[in-house]
Image (cartoon, rainbow, N blue to C red; front, side, top):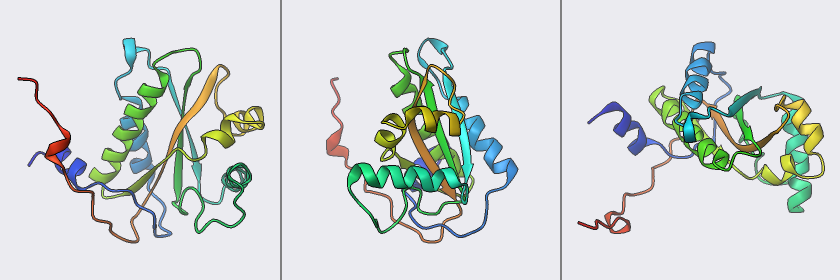
Length: 176
């Protein structure tokens, strides 16, 4: 089977990571995969910010997320202690930014799988990053002016395997 199709088939959300950091080459490959994603009208309006585990901003985002959800002690933080979190932002005024960010994060997830890494796509921090403290988080994450956070992905070495969801052919319909 084709390597890309194999990575898509094998990939599942990883919610348990070893403490081993990803390498600079792995990070570069993930960023490249995210920024080489197709964008509407070839706008290429995406921006990626990388935060490593232990960066205080991750704890601040977690606290704001929990405040918004009314949760004090969730079972895990939003990035499941992955060593690296990539935050994807895009131009606020461009109507296709959300779609473009979704394509980008999927590229990163498939690339991570292809590199033997685990990943989990993260949307639960959207309200925290776009809420009352948006200006603060934009500055802390170096999100460009005129951009909004869209989605994030945590990446690292898998500490546990998870079986990918099954393929259900009944969810597809041909109009031939």
